[in-house]
Length: 91
Image (cartoon, rainbow, N blue to C red; front, side):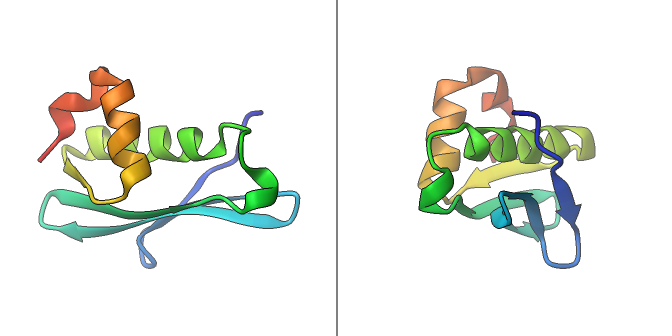
């Protein structure tokens, strides 16, 4: 499934809508450090790789913006552990 992920810089959120349900990642930005605070995929949509795509999109944005990442959310932390190509982004 290829998602249309949007970045709302004012709300500090990456999000998409799947089957009329909103999936999202919340973050804080302190200088050049993006702290990922929350990942939400409604239970009806779990197991489809949506959280992974959102997280990858957030991490690619951080890389392109030259931000470091502090994964406060347990999902984001686990994703980075499973994808060591993003380890250099860790704050």
